Length: 122
Image (cartoon, rainbow, N blue to C red):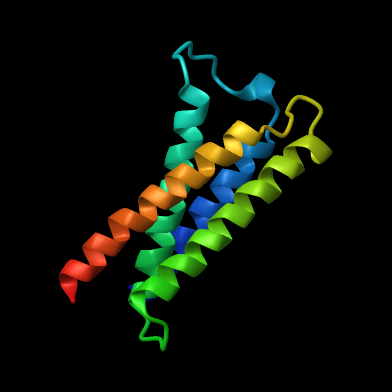
């Protein structure tokens, strides 16, 4: 079961990369105000939740706050790298500081949710 949780988190992480790096001409056009930022928010909310679930099944010496802090820093760093990769490796996408902000907000919300979920279990 633990391997499945890690695989799911890895696939989610890979899915973010694929979604961020594929040509914008391949992305379905939906006209909803702010949908791009909502998608970024949800990507990184999912990132934190799935990695926390994958890591929580493993007994480690890290406290809940340390685990969540580390996952948040990794999520934020990954989001920045993905934005830079869009700018460097694609011709139809550009880096956007507001996407980084949406990523950070999603990751932070994930941290808060997982803190309360995990804290309640303890």
